[in-house]
Image 1 (cartoon, protein in one colour):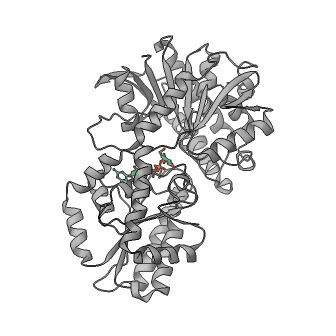
Image 2 (cartoon, protein in one colour):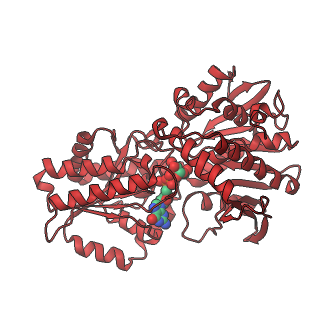
Image 3 (cartoon, protein in one colour):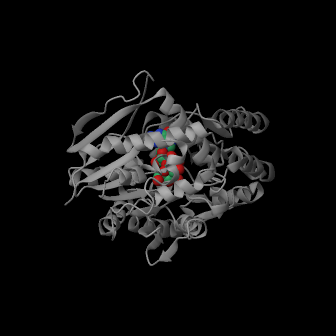
Length: 475
Ligand code: GDG
């Protein structure tokens, strides 16, 4: 079998047995099976004095890791700037806080080209390349410009926005053209896939074909590949390790019910709106006062990026206000934990909770929704309350209670319903959800993407115009 090369912004070294979530475990087996390589940033930031810090290679568990630091300048423009202050908010429908700076975009393109430059000399002719996420939209284009003809697939972990929102990113056309250098473009949902192809039809003159599009004389395959989890692994972890923290929490709760939310601290996750909904539940449902507690776990992320300090401050205020108003000496309504926990603590916590409250304003998929369901005891499962704007809602609408996260009143009513739901209905919903989680698990996501990539028809031929307009910014 041909070798698999994974390229992503960050490289996480994980072994299948270790307690690491998501992508790392998802691609680990495939990399190991093909004697593969993973290329990307090592998480360190180096001085600008050396603009080309060397890559370091290491082999663990049969996987070659090729990693390198980013210079301060690259970190600022590529990572903090265009990736996280322009693309992330715009792709999550927050055009209002998306900030565009030309020098950030230039830095973004330069780092994308640098990733391709580092990979090129290590490639073998039949290697298959799998690129991840919004940091690397233009990477494939640079590979083609360097004469790389291998199959290259790209998976977008976050939403692809509607054309009218994507157009608010000033270099939208160049970015979409660059994306079309990939042989396969994978999205979380069909809605994301359609948003991208709609844009290409309208603005790049693409024509639709059976499994994708034809753009500028080139076939580009597109598809929806909803990322999954390993439900058995989550279930095992949720049952084991009754850690000190979980035991303490449960004894503090006495007979109270528990609502749990787990998110990276991010404005896209709808945490403030969710706090408001919990407060509304207490206001309008006196029966819940003193008998239900809400635990929000939200480890800080991207604290040096625009918009993230503000959300942290808003949450602290909001949690303080709610506890100040409704708390009693023997009952803290809302516990807001602005820190991370081991997965071996998180999964049993999810299992101990009667409601999983997952209400992002926009989310590519949302793995927490899936983990919450897999962590439930089948004989007495909790209820998933899920935002209709999470990619996961497409797959989970039958078993979960869907809410609109902009409707605070509606969320409070749904919380009330979830807390009162009889066992028979909970068990039936849980069964439906588990069937889906098993059929579309992490291995299925990875294998279906890679099978389609290996079969993607035409590959390698660089598109019509060389280097597109990326050269317009002087790179
Ligand atoms: C992006 C997309 C898409 C959370 N807190 C802790 C912790 N977590 C784990 C969760 C879950 C993961 O982090 C978060 O995944 P999500 O999917 O919920 O969200 P993003 O980080 O925004 O991920 C998203 C995903 O990519 C995959 O394609 O679903 O839409 O935005 O696994 O459990 N893990 C630990 N401690 C914590 O405190 N150990």
